[in-house]
Amino acid sequence: MTLSLPIDPQANELLRRDPLALLLGMVLDQQVPMEKAFSSPYVLAQRLGHEPDARELAGYDPDALVALFARPPALHRFPKAMAARVQEVCRALVERYDGDPARLWSEAADGAELLRRVGELPGFGRQKAQIFVALLGKRFGVAPAGWREAAGAYGEAEAYRSVADVTDPESLGRVREFKQRMKAEAKAAKG
Image (spheres, helix red, strand yellow):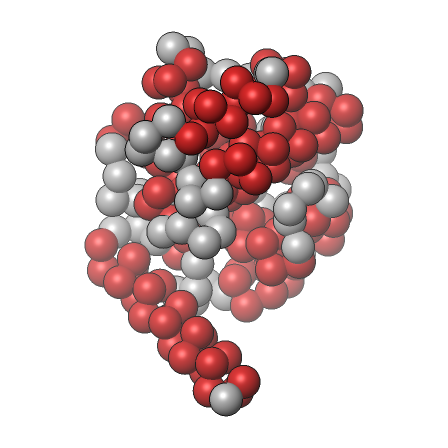
């Protein structure tokens, strides 16, 4: 199984074959619909005229990168902050993994190490790291021993909690229902 979001087919294809695009989609997956977050790496590649690598984005002129993110339609609700975050993540990839995002998971000995590696990236708290581990395991076959346990509830086989569980419009609807229910429960708990 692979990820199948209701986005441009070429954007889905980029996510399937380019580890950096997949990781950047996850970086951008906050405070915007997941379709927006995961289609933005494709739009960024279109704006650049080619598919970037981590080294290119790490060394990109920060103001020029913000301009690419902010150009209508903006790649994110917060283009300046997210352009900076993308650049921070790419710099971490260059420093720790020689610019190869796939090494983040291909060299992890087990699920716990994978979760730790992902969680060390800028902007990745525990929940976001668990979702990415689940996404890798469920949709991309990255399944080191203990990955489901490391992903927590997001690793459950029949869960519909996150982008890791989206395979078609029905599963997307179930994930949205779950997220709405969680927001309502959090709001009720505060009130």
